[in-house]
Length: 368
Ligand code: NAD
Ligand code: GLY
Image (cartoon, rainbow, N blue to C red; front, side):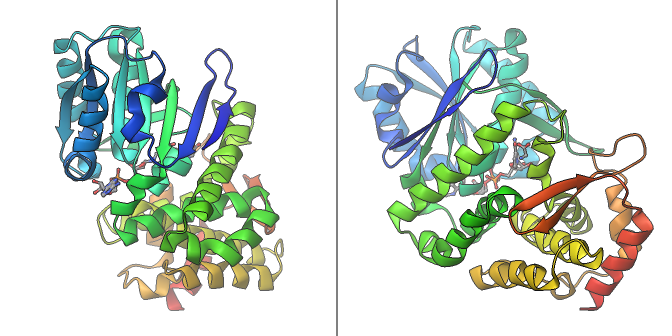
């Protein structure tokens, strides 16, 4: 098992990465479960696949699971589910010193984390991420949120978990499409700051995705360590360091918005396309060698992720895509920060991108 410390001021915690952590949940939680009944929030897919393992782990150590099982999918990150979940937690008598368990992907982690942030002005929670995306990104770093009618993740809080248990065994039931979508966030760490890791991804990602346990542990632990370093430097995304994690996200967000935040394009697929676009946009600005942008696109395509927006069948032009960016929550005093590349493994933030320039670039990309 790999143990990665996340050294945030005031509330450092560990991310443990290994196989079989859910089956030894109580032992892993080391005294954080103070009461017999343990509140666990999950979704119906995860409960079907892993509910019994969690239930038995608790039962065998003298605990009882109090389940809240939400409908799978992004729609559960809503005001309605937040209200119902906090009411349920209050009904369960959860106190500030207790820990709520979030067993699921980014949807469950974000909702549970936000509920924990506001319940009694902040109680403990433990992330047990069950998607690759949640293991390498969303469960670490304390961003929690729900969606509103105005957009995604617009209401939330920074609230760090007390512990993250990334059990590699749970990835065995994850649909391949979800696994690939999560991989986009893995290779992102190579692109933003670690050319050596990008090279590792080139050589090993296919076998890692196919299920090689040692490669999976390396990919998840290395990604978490990269994120932990960034979160330690810039927990609240104020210095620009943490913003680098948004590589591909501004383009990706526009594509997700254009496809209605639906199954047509998963978040990680949008990020994969967005990273290709960010690389090509960097090349178009003369910042990145065109060969490097081609390399990024080839890597994304070879792994089975979408790499060409011309293949999405979008019925819109570049201006319509760029218009979605105006509603991006990263808009700051009328400018939209973009993360660009001047090398594989070297991302940086710019604030001088005009939406008209992006629209022209996207028109070219839409033509293919
Ligand atoms: P998700 O939570 O919707 O999970 C994807 C699907 O996989 C769901 O249908 C779920 O039921 C299923 N599933 C999960 N684990 C499974 C397993 N082990 N076996 C079988 N099925 C399983 O999606 P996600 O991709 O994990 O997360 C996306 C969310 O994460 C978005 O809401 C996004 O905004 C958020 N996010 C947050 C952060 C952050 O820093 N907080 C970072 C990135 C993304
Ligand atoms: N997923 C981006 C961040 O945690 O900042």
